[in-house]
Picture 1 (cartoon, rainbow, N blue to C red):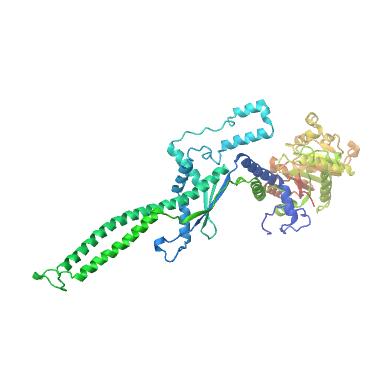
Picture 2: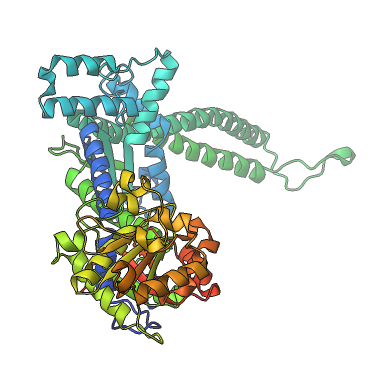
Length: 605
């Protein structure tokens, strides 16, 4: 069980669980369901919609059932002392079932009920997809009362689905084969347990028609048995009659020879004819031959008599014990059962799709995932703000100081202050993987927190490509004034914020991304110059660094800072890309404080 899910499975107790522990708990399952509840609900709704579509477009069918009993018996001329029943094995019973399902029985039913020319019987039970959409459209129009709207009715007629399909004309042979196929596909014959009772079920759109065809099938099987026995008796009688004629002739010839021998009064025994010819038969031999032919004739005569009797009074080995009646309720479709199966199927598919998404999703979604895959700590999680979910609000902590976002950022600030470094964090850098990250929002709100706590704060917008200066000052103020010397003269108060800002235009023009120049500027900002410019020393300097997408060479400037915080987005930042960013920073000897997970949709316990 502990290896069922990958290591990125998020839990609500990541801070308390050891990194190597991977057991699945109730919180894991709850988090999984909460995260993928949308996928599960969509799959469930789709399955229920398909079931509703099927129920709405499928005509109800009815199944009627008749029952016959097979009772094999010996012929009367073979019975001694009364009626004798035979026992049938499974193969014999299955053979009888095969006869009931044969085309011969189906043809007898078609001829008896004249089903080939019955349009109601030949109507397909499973409509085509076009017919289903036509029926579904009619149901929607009737349900919501849209037929009163002329333009909707006209639009429905123009779609071509309102008119039923016109079947192509068929020849007489094709009509017969179509009816034969319907009968054989709708007929279901099964043995009842291990008994000799056989259930004959027929499914049709008309309940009366289903009962009529089921009874006709049972009657056709009994009638076929009688006709088969009658035909066999006729063929046997004809052969016996022919054989009787031959035996009669041979019997008469044998009796005539014996009579002729007796009339000559020659009673010699074993007398040899003169001249060495064949031996002359004796009287006893002639009489035995005549008696033999007489017995054979009498036996065949008895068989012929029984055959004629069987032709006159044939008895079938099966009888109907239950006649089919018109069913009161349809056998299909079953709306409740189908909806229940659709719900179960939808849930299973939803969970399966969610599990597949979870398995192949390698984006950051939990602090434990960050620790296990990157080897760095997660300093906190920030939920989405209520405005502009893509980048966040620049003054969220000022407008909503008690929101979940503000609380999470305060906790992250505390984690940064408690970071294990050789000296306190005074020069803090922020970077991310891509330019569309909410790095600027985090920098602005984090600077506001520091400033609101009484620390003199400066934000250096060093991200030239995705600048936050235009969002704080506006495009005209950000790029309308040329850069002044010395560079500290370009520092301006951020409008409506309690911190100062060094615009990205000054950073770009003075090439402050070079580590040496940035280090000199930071030393000057930390010391202050009250005599010349009334510039007090800054307690905290936040540098909005370029992203990994800007190039690894621009991130070297982070080596002169006390620490760099990586901004990652929940469910969007790929773990491999984030790992590449960590390796790039570590290769440039940049101290990585950890990862701040933004846009987190995970509920904490």
